[in-house]
Image 1: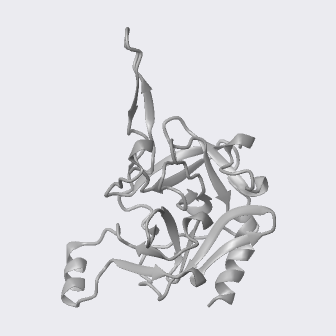
Image 2: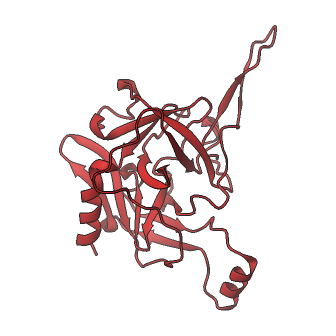
Image 3: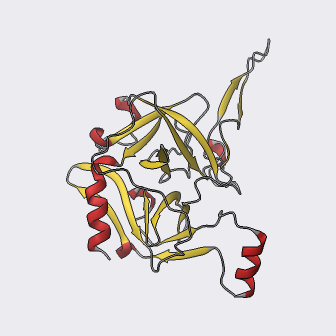
Length: 255
C-alpha cells in the first residue's frame, strides 16, 4: 500500500502492446511526516490517514469516520534503540492506539455543501514529544497553480490491492493544477474549497484519504479522493485555508 503512487509504463511489445503497472511513484517517508496517524473503523470497512495537530487533536476527511474508529498514533515513529529500551523497561509503550467514539468526532457541516473535513478529539493527550503538523497563518490562500506539494499515505499499491497495506508510510510530491468538474469525488462537494493536483505516475488509492497535504512544511490540504476500483489522478483535496476559524473554534469549544 503505497501512498498509492502508480507509474503506468506503456511497454511497446510488437505483438502484445501491453500496459503494465509498476509501483514507482513514491518512496518511504523515512523520518518525514511522522505526525501521520492511521484511522480504521472498529467494525472494519474503512481505512484512512490523518494528521496530529497537537497532543489532543487529529484532522482527517469526514468520510473517514462517522462511526467508532481506532486512531493509531506514532506507529511509524522512528526512535533510537536506547529510547525503545527505556520505554520497554519502564512499561511505557511508545506506540499509541485509541478507540474514539462518534461523540468525539467533529465533521465540518454546512447545508448543501460537503466539505469532507473532520476533527477528532483523542481520549487523552499523547506525548508532547510526538511530531505534529503546523496550520497555516489565518489569512492564508491555497498554493498557486504549478506549485509542488507533498503527500503521503498507506493506501493500496494498486486498485486491485485495496485490502493490503504496506509496512511503511510512503511519500511523494505532486503539482497543483486546475480542477475539472468531473474531478470532484461527489457532486455535493463545494467547488470553492477543493484543490486538485496532478503528476504523471503519482496517484491516490484506497486508504490514502484523510492524509495531509504539505506545502512549505505546513498543512494546506486533506486528501479526499477515495477511489474504489482504480486509483485517482488528479488527486482531490480540501483546501484548509477557508476552514481555519472553524478548526480553531472547534478545538477551543470542545476542550
